[in-house]
Length: 303
Image (cartoon, rainbow, N blue to C red; front, side, top):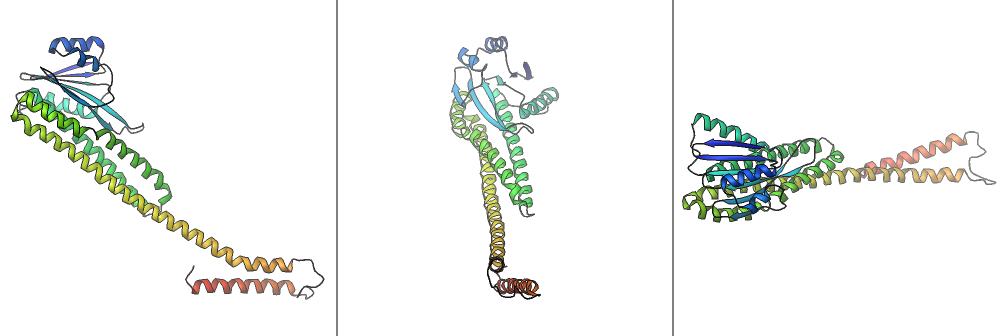
């Protein structure tokens, strides 16, 4: 599917799951290298940036959270020319769709200055994408805050799985964006050469947007690790308290069981066995002994 947006002399062509004919059409119209055109047809495993005579070819992967499904990375291919920008993706990507609405309104109302070359379109688009990542990380941070409240409400056991899921999400974010720094550094060199020194500020600003995402990921990871340590400590403390109580209960009942076993033996003579009140005397003695042991533990503050 091809969508074309125009602003003055600038053109943005957005391809979603493009066919061979659509890629060939764009290749011929904007004189795109066949090697680049071929890469638009299939997803790429790694991000990269290449400088050609009439364009810059850039591949980036962005993490996304799809509620109700597994998290996955979304790829966007950028072909940035002097007066055209081609984006190719293999599914609907929310920030790109959001940017298309803004771009369309601006092109109709002509109330904003998008710049004099397609590098500016890329700049505003990538800022929108990184801003969307920040929003997703804010959502993760909100989930961490909710998890913190649940931990201190006594739901430590349930939070083990939730913390693991959040950790997996943050790891996926970190892995997906880990290669952005080196690619954006290469883009800064290629972009300065292609668009001139005046565009260097915007290229460095893009790197700054990446660092904001990177910082949010690191902060969320640290917050999560602190929560995990706290949750583990509370779980361990609670389990120790349970084991302590069970151990004390077993220790209390051990002499009582031993006493009951003695009087349960088959022997020619056992004390109190011929006494008509022997049963009640034995039971009372066991209860008194148990209370004495229990009181001793309370006095020692072991309970």
